[in-house]
Length: 165
Image (cartoon, rainbow, N blue to C red; front, side):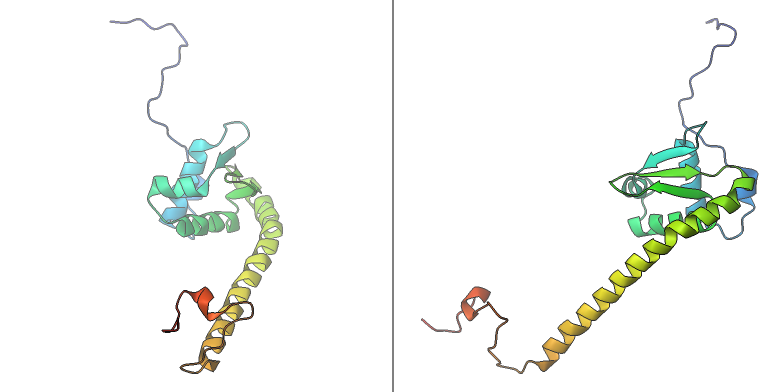
């Protein structure tokens, strides 16, 4: 039998997280978003509540798509459970909100951060849709057997020669 000194800490072989009770009572929280919040809590620093995680890596750990993890993160931001502090680079830094009294302030901060992101991606989606419309219009306007090529391109640059020598 081994003896232990008084006050010695035992090593925990499996990481764990503690989720505050108020989080369990949020009805809008999906199971995936709850898992992500628990994962953030597990990796957050005890004193500061900050953690640095790559959402791509989180998706691999969970076995979910990156898009699913991004939507869970967006839900956590809307509910005021996390705040994204840094977005550049591969890993983002998150602040995990563990106190119910801090949720309102986190929601306000997230609204300020989310609006530019919404505008940016909404514009990107519109650009993509308008570009697809232009391509489909160009395809409809060309006639069968039409041999016109885009400016700067010739028939030989497309890799076929139509039987000419």
